[in-house]
Each structure stands twice: as structure tokens, then as C-alpha cells.
Length: 502
Image 1 (cartoon, one colour):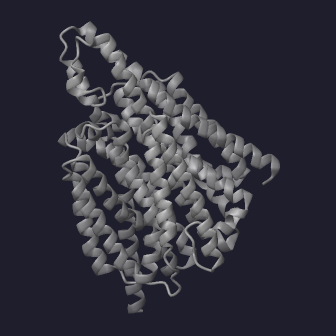
Image 2 (tube, one colour):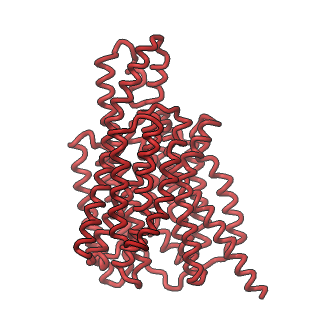
Image 3 (cartoon, helix red, strand yellow):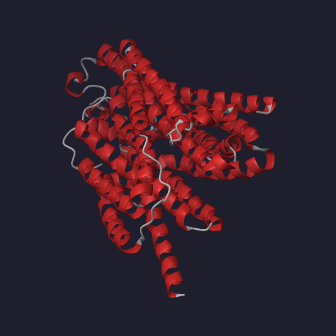
């Protein structure tokens, strides 16, 4: 009885530590969204490059998940968990100490390699140690941590900015949590390994990472067509090579990153495509604080709070999506998700002008997002793969969603950069004698606003602020319309699946 009690205590500690770690790693992209404008300004980079502080993190997670999962099976989940947490802590410290933007990106990548494996190690541990009747509940808690981090992240970021005035503290707060996890993880977690650990698909991982990076570089240079197409073509070629290579190694009996045998199912392919689009939905949230700051002109330390309605609505939407999926089916729920999301995202460019209209639009967008991120896609992907491959199929869906979450912020930031280029032209044409644009540049939003605020003439000040808001709104409107198009495609696919009974 003593040994049994010891095992239960060890499992309780492990679940608690994994849950804290999953929450911490999920928090990191939510918390940085509040400071995206501030970080871009502090390193004097454009929005399209500033967004790389987010996308390099999601990129690192996308390529690390399949690798870390295999390594933890081979070398032990406790050992890899401690390694991952240590990397995350080192990356967090280096981000806070970054002397330039390149150093920050490298540090964020280190942080992502550490954070990316935490969820998959925790999931693997639960599946290996808990009886089946208890696995769903714990995995549900892990999933809930991501939703909770989406709500708390931007708000916590806003609090930290308000109290300290420095974005660096958003990353320094990770350090004591990391130390706690390392100490108690070493003492309390028992080592487990898989007796049937598969081989690591190194070439597939390299092709996947190179393909994502190529497309990211292309989308970053979206304002210049000559710079876009070579990267997009290269990325497409690399993804084609990836699929062909994955098919080859699967035929040899090895484990690929992307199971090409499942791609024979039309429903599986369509579900993965919607998963990619859902990453684009989620990516739109990252820029909401910047929209609130630059278009609605809310102070930076308060902008993060404005994301709360959408985040809470997405949590409600996830629950409603599960209920509707059980009652009317996943396909019909997809249609409803698309309609609600389309209503929300279209409302931003054509209707939002203040807090009330913003609140209504963000709640619609959040509920639609929650529907899409919840049960419908998991049900469809499980249905398409069958019970034997359900875990692999859900893992692939998660990977594809992560790819969408990596690529779409780069696209959105490119659209915002085009708006900044337009703003520079407008200000130089209309107010060249009033503002010293050569000193600050229009892409450094904080310094630009600071210079406008120093103007003595209140009428001129109000006029320039309105011009800035109106011009940048065009970039954000393009972003919201892209998200609305994703919602429309989701509606179309839902109707197709329902009518064709796919």
C-alpha cells in the first residue's frame, strides 16, 4: 500500500508540474502581444519584422514538437522535461537581456525549443502512466491551460507594462517559475521511457523547418513582389519534397512527422486545411492590442485589457462548440463557427469606432474562434483517421495549426508594413514642416506619437492623430478581411462536407 500511495503522490506532483509548465509556455505568446508595438519601436524594426518575435516562437514550437516527443520516449520524459524547462528559462533570460533584435530572435527560438516540448512530454507522460479512464480529464486540463493563458497573457502583460514600463519584465517573471519547476521536477517526477520509441525523422524535420522559414521570409517582404515569389516558390518546393520523403519513410515502416497514409482520406486532408486556417484565426488575436493602440489610440499599458472580451468569448465558444458538435454534428458546427467568425471580423473594418462596437465585434470573433479551436476539428480528424490512428491524426492537426499560427502573423505584419509605408508618404506630403520624420520614422510608432503630442496647436495635433489612425486602419482592415475570408472558406467547406456527406 505504501508503494501504491507513493506512485499516486508522484503522479499528482508530475501532473501539477506539467500543468504549470504548459501554462507558462502558453502564456508567452499571449503576454508578448501586448508589447508587440513597444518591442518593435525599441529595436527600430518594422511591424513585419517585429512580428518575428512572435512567429519565431511558434516556428520553434512547430519544429520542436515532433522531435522532442521522440527524444523523450527514447531518453526519458523526466530528463527531457528538465532539459526543456532549463532551455525555456535560459531563453527567457536572454530575451530580457537582448542588446539587439537579432539576439532577441535567437533567444526567442531557444525559448520556443524549450517551451514547445513541454506539452508533448506532459501528454506522453499521462498516456504512459495514467489509466485510460483518467487520461481524458488530465489532458482536458492541459488543453484548458492554453485557453486560460490566452485570457491571462495579454492582461498580465498590460499589468507588467503599467507597473514597470519595461517589456523585459514580461520574460524575467519566468525565471523563478523555471527554478521551481526544475527543483521539484528533479525531486518529485519519476523517470519513464517508451519501450517502443520510434526513430527520429531528422530529414523530415529539416524539410519542414526550411519550408516554413522560406514562406515566412516571403511573407515578411510582401510589400515587394520581387522578394515574395522566390521564397514562396522555394517553400512550396520544400513542402512537396517533405510529403514525398514522408511517404517514402512511411513505406519503409518508419514513423514520419506527417503520416502520408492518412492523407489518402479526403476528410483528413480537408480537416488539416481547416486546421491551417484556424491558425490564421488565432494569429489575428496577436495584433488586436496593436490595433487598439494605433487605430483606437488607447494607451499601450491598457491595450492588453481590451483583448479580454475576445479571449473570454473564445473560451465560451469552445464549450458551446463541444455541445453543438454533440447535438448537430461537427460539419454543421463548422458552418455556424464560420458565420459567427465572419460577422466578427467583418465588423472591425466596417463598423468598429469605439469600445462598445469593438466589444461586440471581438465577442463575435472570439466565439467563432472558440468554435473552430474546440471539438469540431478533433471529431472530424478522429473520424477520418479511425480509432487506431486517432492520436497520430490529432497530433498532425496540432502541428498544421501551429504552422498556420506561424505563417499568418507574418502575412498580417506584412500588410501592416504596407500601411506604414503609406503613412510615411501621407505625413511627408501633408505635414513635412510640422514633423521631423527623418528623426523617428513612421514605423517607430511610440516616438512618432511622442513627437505629435509635443505640438502646441491642439487642432493640428488632433488632425495628425486622426490621419495616423485612419491610414493605419487600412492595414488592419486588410488583416481583418483576410481573417474574414478564412471564415467564409470555413463556411463553404462546412456546407460541402454536409452536402457531399464526406
